Length: 263
Image 1 (spheres, one colour):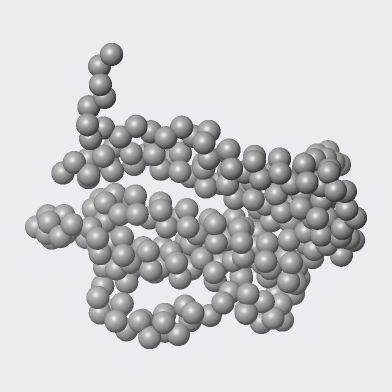
Image 2 (cartoon, one colour):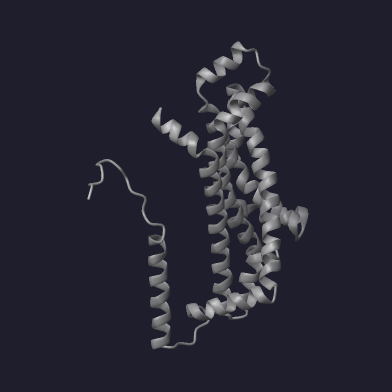
């Protein structure tokens, strides 16, 4: 049997990542069956899965998921979209970046949830409140990562655009965006995770809708199985969103990454 060449890395089996979570769930289920307990905070994994199936079947979790998804998507479009445009502009102009640096550094450290009282006074309850808070949360990560992506464009490409006397719009569309797109996609993945976290947090804190409010309602009703079921569902949504974006990233930019690593 031929030996495997040295220096060749084998891909780890994907199923190995499931082993530890399954062992933890099995240990929890076994422990709660051996020593049954009445608790307002703990439920057996089998009870959590049953509550999840019930919430999906009666449609309450589906409605809550749609509400959170719309708010998350709206906040992403608002915050990440404006952050991308601002990041491209500031990345292309050092003078503009220097002029805006003080304002960025003043606003960037503000926790997005600290703006909930202000947004509540301005917008009231509903989607506008949540979209505004989520948009603020993702604006600065996208802004900073877009600036970094633009500045990472090879200088020789910018020199070519200057030699060709391309307009600013043509330079951005034909040179900057294609070169920066892999980094911008990574920024989008980061913003999606942030947007989901902030949307659920806003719903828990002040907006009576969506998955965050469902989680809060289950906690106030002393239903730990439903509470943990909603929490599990939120985790699954976040995992699926990240896995889907990773798959798109490998499909669209895999060859570019391989080429970059070999050059």
